[in-house]
Image (tube, rainbow, N blue to C red; front, side, top):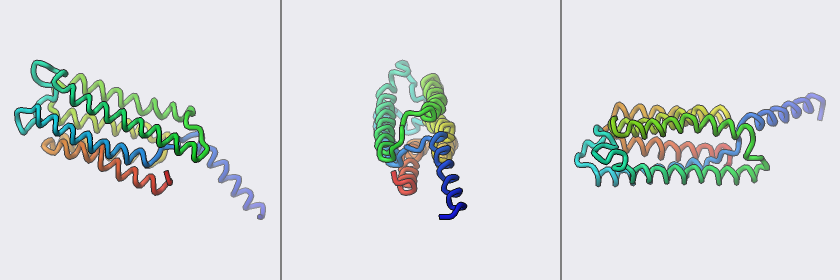
Amino acid sequence: MNQSDHHLEDIQVIRKLMEESSRFLSLSGLSGIIAGLLGIAGAVVAQVIITKNSATAEWYVQPLAGGPEGLLSCLPLFSAMGVVLVLAFSGAVVFSLHKARRSDRRIWTPVTRRMLVSLLIPLGTGGLFILLTAATVPASVTAASSLIFYGLAVVSAGKFTFGEIHWLGVLEVMTGLACLVLPQYTIILWATGFGVIHIAYGLFMHLRYRG
C-alpha cells in the first residue's frame, strides 16, 4: 500500500468518526415498518370509533370533540392513538438498540439527546394544539395537524440522523396539507401518511443500511 492509499484510508476513518459523532446512525428501518403497520391499524380503529359515534357521514366537517361532553367524547379515539404512538416509539427504541449493539455503537450520546429534543418540541406543540382545538375545528383539520406537526418534528430531528429522514418529514407534511384540501379522504390520507409512507421508508432504509 503506497502513501496515497494510507492518506485516503486516514481520511475515510476521520470522516466516519466525524459522522458518528454528529449523527444518530442506529435508527432502524424495521422500526419504520412496524410504525407503518401500527399506523394503519390505528387508522382502522379510528374509522370504527368515528363511524360508531358520528351521526353523519360527513363527520370530518365537525369538531372531533364536539358535543356537551367535549374532549371526553373522543377519549377512546385519543386513547387508541396514544397506544399506537407508545408502541411505535417502543419499537423504534428496541430495534435501534439492537442495531446499535450489532454495530458496536453507543445509542445514548449527546447527538441522541439533541435529536430527541428537536423531535419532541414540535411533536409536543402539535399534541397541545390538537387537544386545545379538537372541540373547535373540523375533525379533518385535527387529523391534518397531527400529520403536519409530526412531519415538522421529523424534519427538525432529521439533521441529526440519516438524510432520508428529512424527506420522510416533508412527505408527512404534504400528506397533512392534502387532508386540508381533500377532507373527505381524511382517514385514507391519515393511513397513507402514518402507515404506507412509513412502511415504504422503512423498507428503503432497511435495504440500504441493512438494519
